[in-house]
Length: 286
DNA sequence: CACTTGACCTGTCCGC
DNA sequence: TGCGGACAGGTCAAGT
Image (cartoon, rainbow, N blue to C red):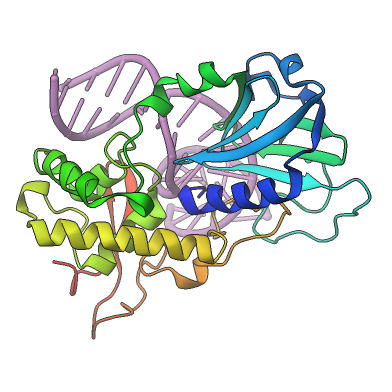
């Protein structure tokens, strides 16, 4: 699903393709998916593209910002003015025709069109002043991101986590503790660190926490390297409508019943934690 | 207050 | 085959 690496991939592509482009108009197809005044983006140049955890931010002229949250099935797809989209991806809803039945917002540019698609309508686009967007409660409460945490931040977060009663996996997915980590990378980082996802936080040692933070960084960076994950249920596509490749490197996610990649005899088990599918190796994750 | 569960949606897949 | 139910998972709100 769109987690930090998926949004980072789109952010990099968007910055490259559309910095300096002008938004001619914003068409809202699904009002539920949109907040703010569409007109406030009209005829404004894209100044910068940023990311905060899983939120994509597009700064435009006049101190205005568009924020995108993909939640589970969001996609932002760009079609250049004279480029014909061919093909698509077998696991995605994007089959080459845009707008698709799941297109919720259309951003018309001077050099093409951006389509915000979202099958399940959990995601949203919000337009507001840069100030308004930065004051959104969700953004203000975000914890640090594992890919850029300083040693001080790691130590601080460890202190905080040690007091938590929830299992470690639920805690590392709490965006107010650390941000950007979703189900796929949480599962894989815990496997890398050799920690069972249902371990109580009080049971973990400082070295284990430190190892876990290193592994979170490792899998997130790998996710970015492979352009995100596009699995059977993941509707993620990049800016150009292509899938990512991290799914070819899943350690545990979606591998129930399959052999552990690290130890002899381990079979990946699936349990539910915090209402979410959780995968681990019962042999080598203690 | 801290933590857990359910709701939000829609499409797919599984079992009867 | 057909259909109902479970499941997918990011975040918020309601419940314990």
